[in-house]
Amino acid sequence: MAGGISDVATLDCNRHYRGDAIAEGKQMMLSTPLFRDRTHAGEELAKEIVLQMSFDSPQEEQKIVVYALPRGGVPVAVPIAQRLQCPLSVIVAKKITLPDNPELALGAVTSDGQVLWSKRKPLNLSLQQRMLQEAQTKAQQAWEQLSPSCPPVTPHGALALVVDDGIATGMTMAVTVKALKAHQPLAIWICVPVAPLELMPYMQEWCDRVIVLETPHPFFNVSRFYEEFEQVETQTALSQLQHQIWLQ
Image (cartoon, rainbow, N blue to C red):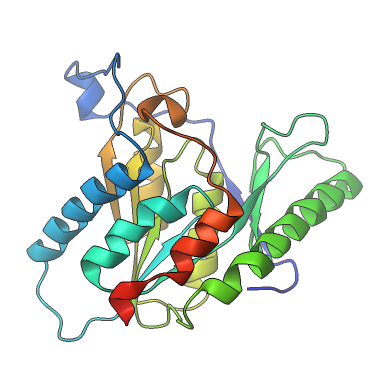
């Protein structure tokens, strides 16, 4: 997926939502992780996805494609694609950040140029463009590395399952869904092991269905919910994408 910069959309990440889980006193102060590792999270997520599909009216020969957000989403997505016997591909999105604060996401962009800004984006247009171009260049480089290992699939007319190892701000997930919609899938499901409860209303607006196993409160960051959360190396992601033996 490569191309120019698209129209800009805006995501409001500043509002907060307190749903029934919190209202009923189900805040989770975790002393032990929820998942052993990303593979375990993917296995648990696969069970829930299959259960959700069983509630729907069966569609003959429904086309399903799993899309992982690399690199952390790939090992989560592998058990899902294997369970559903469907192809696994990737969509690359990168956070747009200030040069002196790479952890603060002011927006996100995909390798094919779909863009999403938060309301904290800088007013300086020159700085905006520079930040955007740097992020898209990184996304394009990652796509060029990973795409040769992905099966030749298209989301057009398919049920597209978008998978990551968790959601913190939602910026990269939102722009990924935006990129997918341009290809006219039959439906888009966001599928993640863990996400903040306050993001649920937004995610439900972005796609056709949201499957999140846990919405702990307080959230802080994704890594605290895993016993093992080492960085997924590019070579590992490539190997997992290349060895989709269930498709053979």
